[in-house]
Image 1 (cartoon, rainbow, N blue to C red):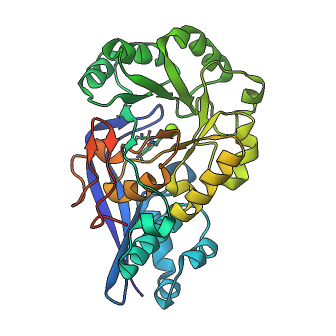
Image 2: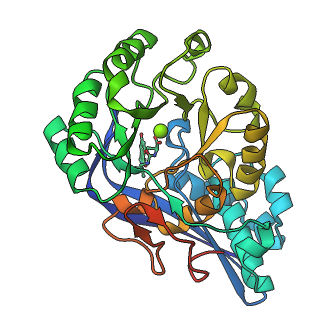
Length: 323
Ligand SMILES: CC(C)C[C@H](N)C(=O)N[C@@H](CCOc1cc(O)cc2c1C(=O)N[C@@H]2C)C(=O)O
Ligand SMILES: [Mg+2]
């Protein structure tokens, strides 16, 4: 098996701000695996809040070059690497390689029936009047509002005023205390917010187990793998599965099944990345309560054979892209 890795830089359409930082571009790590004339590709950006970057993902994979080139299976990669960005890139490349080698689609290999997916579209943190403009200009019907604890009410109100028709979810990216969250919810209860993602910091969200939030809550930074299901199910109604966190599609599919058994609703999320990252996420998103796979919509340009997004509805990926 031949391994190739590449770091790529993608400019964002506009500055992306969370409650903590801002970015004008993102880096991705691409992995290509070739065997007997067939090629499979996978992409990762890494779990940023665990210190992973596209560069560290590439470095982790390069360190395993000999082992990988000697021959790596999807079963093998689960024990070779821990859950994280490097395993995700390899696992997705191995799925793609298997599809290409067997001349079968990802749907045939997984036994999943593909349907178009409605994704959330992210309105990034900005002055409320700019968030009003961005929401008003967005053709999507499900909007995810990034908020800061200090500005959340004005940010949410601006988006709701611009889009009385839209379904709205909110992402706090760990910026709130429980008291701030309760005060916000009391003010926005009539604004038709469907869900609030990760209001409190991971590691400081135990208080949620005694709080019956009138707006459903979704874990993101508090939720990674199977080990988190029991604790998170006692604190949140939903949890965000990202393939970077699960270490690939193989474990994401297993995790989704286990979450459903535990009564934990599924959101499939993403980082800002190209369609090559979204294609396997699209597979995991089949049947999920929420999909948040708008990564490429934030980029100035995407890969060849990009995923097709129309008014927030994503079509099944082309086989030339992945799967
Ligand atoms: C920008 C994403 C495509 C929007 C997506 N809908 C989303 O909200 N994703 C995540 C992660 C947010 O993205 C972050 C956060 C951060 O602190 C740093 C970065 C990113 C990112 O995508 N690139 C940089 C590294 C979510 O919170 O749900
Ligand atoms: Mg989030």
